[in-house]
Image 1 (cartoon, rainbow, N blue to C red):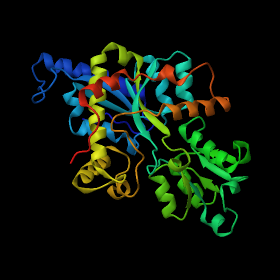
Image 2: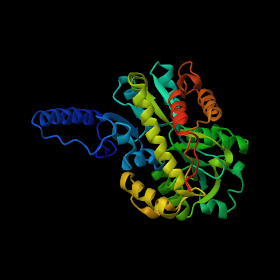
Image 3: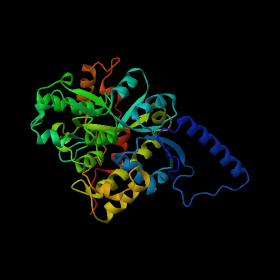
Image 4: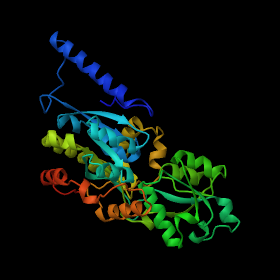
Length: 364
C-alpha cells in the first residue's frame, strides 16, 4: 500500500511519470481481463491521493490510516512522497501535483498563500500542550560543568544550532530568548538538520542546539544537558498541520472529507496507544510496529524512548499560536506580502468529520 514512499532527494517529477506509466499498464491489463478487484471494497474505485510527508514520527496518523485500511475504506489510494523539507511542497500544491501535505507552520507557507497559491490548513498534525514537547534546548555538558552556562541569560554570545529560519522552531527560539531578555542578534545562530545537531553538539562545533525528538534524546544520551523544552516555554504551540491543495479541496469535497476522516481515525488509534505520551501495552506495540515499517527510524526502542508531542484526536488547531508565529516571521522580515492566518485556515472538512465521528473518547 505504501510502496510509493520515496527516498529523500528522489525526484517528484520522476514519481509522477512513474504513476502515469502504472496507470497505462493498469488500463492495458484491464482490457485483457487481468486486473483483480480488491476484496469487498467499500467504494467501487479507489482514487489516488498524493500525500507529501517529511517522514517524521508525527506522520503516524497517515501511516496507521494506510496500514489498517482506513484510507481504502474511504475510497482513497494513498501515494506518499517524502520531502526533505515541507517548504518544497508549496509549489506543488499550486500546480496540483500534490493533494495533501503534512507541513509546518512556516514563513514559506504564509508567503505561498500571500502569492495566491490556494493552500488550506485543515487540521492539526502536532502541537505542544504541557508535558508533550516537540523540541528541547540542549547545552553542552562541559559548559554547564564549567559554570559558563547557569541560566538562559548565559545564551548570549553562544553558537546555537536551530533548524531553518522561518519555521515553527524559530518561534520557539524567539520565546526562549525573550524569557532570557535577549534578541536573536545576541546569539550566533546556525542552521542545520536535527541529525546534524546531535553530531555538532557532541563534537563541540556548537554550544547549544534545539533538536526535535528522537534526536534530542539521542543528544542527551551522548551527554548534552536539557535546559528547557518547548512545551514549557511555548505551550500549545502549533508545530505542523494537515494541508490541502485548493484543487483537491474543491474538485471532490466528499473525497476530501473522507480522507480527513480516515486520517483522524488513525490519529485516534495513535492516542489510544499512549500512556502519559509514551507507547504502552499491546496497542502501543502495534503502533510501534507500524512506525518501524513506515518511518526512517527502524529501531522500536527509539520510538519507545521519548514522550511524543501531541496530535489532537479531534484535529483541533491552536490558532493563537499560529498568529504569534506569523507575527515573529513578519518582525524578522520573512513575510513578503499581506497575509493573515485566517486566509489559510479551512475548518469545514474537519467540522464535517467531527459531526460524523463525534468528539474523541479514549478506547477502554
